[in-house]
Amino acid sequence: MTPFYFSALFISALFLTTLARLWLARRHLAHIAAHRAKVPQAFHEQIDLAAHHKAADYTSAKTRLGMLSALFESLLLLAFTLGGGIQWIADFWQATFTSPLAQGMAVIVAVLLLSSLLEIPFGLYRTFVIEARFGFNKMTLALYLADALKGLLLGAALGLPLLFGVLWLMERMGGNWWLYVWGVWVTFNLLLLFIYPSFIAPLFNKFSPLQDETLKARIEILLQKCGFTAQGLFVMDGSKRSAHGNAYFTGFGKTKRIVFFDTLLSRLSASEIEAVLAHELGHFKRHHVLKRIVFTFALSLGFLWLLAQLMQAEWFYQGLGVAMPATTLATALALLLFFMVMPVFSFLLHPLMSHTSRRHEFEADAYAAQQTDARDLASALVKMYQDNAATLTPDPLYSMFYDSHPPALLRIARLQTL
Image 1 (spheres, rainbow, N blue to C red):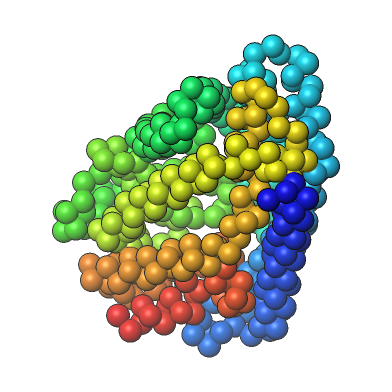
Image 2 (cartoon, helix red, strand yellow):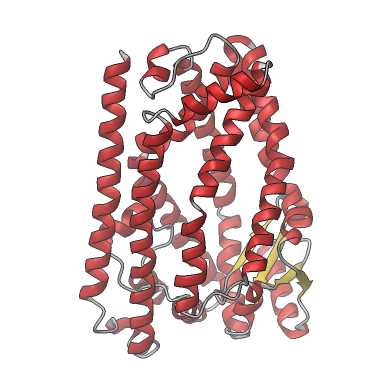
């Protein structure tokens, strides 16, 4: 392939992907607006019209911001690639450092930092305008900046050694470098799963042991019944940042924890909390977590193999607006370019990923219905839809592409049959 043809392919793929994202968002907005006037019959008794309006308006506001973000991301990608941004940054660091490895690390870090800085306005608007307008934001600007600084320092502490190791292996391990890098990547991610609950999550939130003895006893009985062991039951101060509620498992192996947002515990009854927990247990009992980990690692292995084929092709660099240098810097540029443009070419994988995730949610719901009363899970979900202002009427095609959870109408209807 020539650089010209690859440039044309990249521009076409970027244009079509951006157009598809905007078109899906417009469909979503139109579908929500068309069903805004009336609460769906299945939720008529549990959710009032005001709450339905709030969910419609909140979802629409997020979708409109997402459209602007999609346009910005596409323009930024063009500026970095064919616009010469990465080439300019690479030239700057080549003149600054003599070590090709240092040059490569500097280029990747600079592009990531610059991208993050340019996207800050979207994050600020989402948090302090949209979330605040609908009564969800509890963060102060000081807390927002503190979180950003912690995230930056944590990313540097974990990411820089990983990046150094990856670039070193890519340069030193010959044609099979991608197998060594994959091994390091798998080890790194498994390590994160182990250390996240005890060392990383507490940097951002406070986790306190569950104090409600009655609820704790019910949960422990459920865990015994399901054959599940956890390091502990914890309550997270989610209300410190947001009014949204949730519950989740975190960790791996003996480090597994069950975490409830304090906002969730204040809203649901004991039987509803038990049903929500049974749903999360269903993901483990049906091996969804393991399947997702295995799939992610297999996909990353395929991507690294593909990168190994492309990094020797001069048209790959030149087709994305970058001259292929005859140093280790070429390795870093290949890595950077590959993972920047891969989302453009893999957009059509979204429906497949979403379909798999939704199927897992149905399976976890079915497991919860076997361990608890399905009506309690349905009731809890309705409250969570209402409290989180999740729309009950998403566009079906938009939902098929993006939603990791089934639409409310389908999910509640299936629970009612159980």
